[in-house]
Image 1 (cartoon, rainbow, N blue to C red):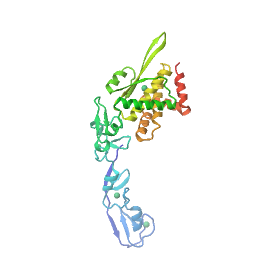
Image 2: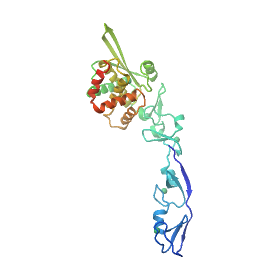
Image 3: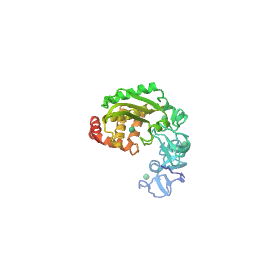
Image 4: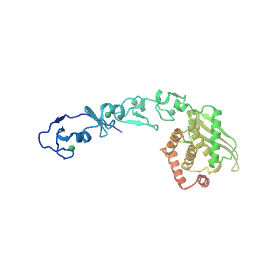
Length: 326
Ligand SMILES: [Zn+2]
Ligand SMILES: [Zn+2]
Ligand SMILES: [Zn+2]
Ligand SMILES: [Zn+2]
Ligand SMILES: [Zn+2]
């Protein structure tokens, strides 16, 4: 978006004393005594004061010096600069031209994209006043101090939260009939190696691995390992855990030819359902990102399942997955 504005001077105002019959150019009634002439037209004092005199659209007071026109409104120069014109929430400089904004309502000069770091989780630009600073992980991820305050870095904490998410899914009907799911915290490079040929998608935060042994076409034993990125904020960790747990459920209940869009879409939908039980702003932000994901598999898959869910219950979705491609 662009804003344009001009600075214009107020034209000369003269007050004349009645000399001949004159009509007011605002109300068309005759003028008995003194009147005001402005831009070649004549007005009763009140008509001029109430209808013609230029008022500031911000403070409502008359403007008798130079004024600024922005978005077709008129402002005192100071009112415009202090209250109307956009300021960048990162550097506080005036924004005159293109800008970008984040989910949290902050607006920034677009050129900060090229030279300043953004948090990989909340999307804010890292700064003392917006994020209390930030940190960079060894794998290159950038996290702000707000997000880092809940980040999950120890396997003990990870196991605890993972268990809670599994419990939460259990309550909505995603019952995983399998005892031990191994959980591993990995960095971005390790996760990329594990998923390299299996899941091709932009921002991968986890992976569910199914290892099994077959004899005469029947599975005799199997193992599940869920890999999740270390250092994610707790809410992102929960969403990723719910997504991967749904894949474990799929391995146990669905055909291995399950359509990719349906498989990822229902995993995203499960994460969405789990996150919907929270009311905080960050959880709403995660829901927003799931709903508006432009990825052709994750985003499109989610929207396809969501459409199905407009007419059906969660249990019906699970049954649809079980019937799919068998
Ligand atoms: Zn008048
Ligand atoms: Zn003003
Ligand atoms: Zn700026
Ligand atoms: Zn952040
Ligand atoms: Zn997935």
